[in-house]
Image 1 (tube, rainbow, N blue to C red):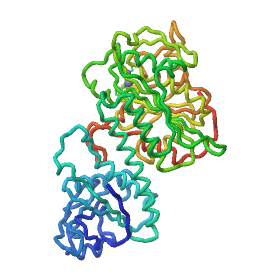
Image 2 (image 1 turned 90 degrees about the vertical axis):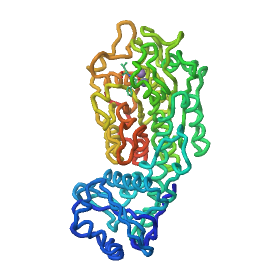
Image 3 (image 1 turned 180 degrees about the vertical axis):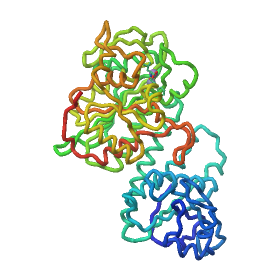
Image 4 (image 1 turned 90 degrees about the horizontal axis):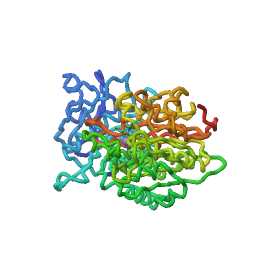
Length: 509
Ligand code: BES
Ligand code: MN
Ligand code: ZN
């Protein structure tokens, strides 16, 4: 789908439909709409006067004008109260409008952006990116495994944004283009997460990474079983023991390390199917565990976005990929495994596998002398119990990095919420017979999982993101349909785009 930007007047758009957003209970229509209102016989003002449209968030009304000299239809969409505007409400309203248009099968809609270059602290750039995200994210539909009729495949060809003043045209155009890059990366990630576990295998993900690299100039290597053995990657080697799929450790690198840039390492959990292993999961909802590579997919998506946007930071992606399956040679509860760092771990539950493979990646990150390490993983059911589905769990060892992630999350509305990583929690994963154990008991499962990772973190700033509650949406929302959310792509990309050199280089416990 194409996003175009042009300057002009609403009434001169001779399209199937023009989208007009309005606040709740406006007394007077914005001046940009006067001519359109007049030319359409006062339909907009009549509707408002008669309260057939009140402007509540995501309310829509389609008005046919039946005229050739102006847009054929006007689609009003509500933004909610003017005093409560946020960029996410803009994103929602744009998503809602785009879905109505898709439902009606119109091919070339337009949307009016108002004259104001700032409203309630929201700049025209932010409005533009919210609209483009809302449109592109809301139209995503996972149809890979569906037999579609030709008419089901029809979608919007071109979505035109109309700005009022020529002087903002260049700015809006460039923001729209960059946002499209990010939104397409989110949809790429959603495809990977929605795919079946038998299709999206470790080898498949490794090939996807190579494909991204080839298209973008990012460097990519993958480690196979013998390489991992040489390195002593005790986590991924042991977790993959019960699977007939070979494990892969993907390494991506964007840019190179320079004096005046920072190195950020992104780590994504790539368990392409988590059956629990010998500590087998119950059957109910086990199918969802095909998505236990949502962290890996988010890192791949972030690389896709970043390589298109070209920030100056040096970014490394480390993605351990494996299945977690039970068979005769599978990892057993009670096994003791040894890691690259020399640490020994008592495996009490083979279903706590994510932390084992992430530990390898965190140890591997050290060789890049990172200024920040961020891992993202569908790590614990406990995170869903604690935070539900609206917040990603965040834990880490460095206040500055945590605050940056928090700010990035607020900006793109992929919000994070911090949980504590106090020393007392670390005591819960001490083992009687090894250095540590891979479960921390009944309580604080998200925190003890993060403590486990923390045991492998060295003197670098680190944040762990638990997306067990946010990788999926259970029912349609205004801009994300049921299924994989693509969480993490926008968050990591935003963090990288806003990156400034870290002040404090070391981690703090
Ligand atoms: N992949 C799961 C966590 C998960 C659960 C993600 C639900 C998304 C939705 C992880 O590997 C796991 O099984 N964790 C266990 C850990 C426990 C055995 C200590 C859990 O959360 O139950
Ligand atoms: Mn598990
Ligand atoms: Zn898992």
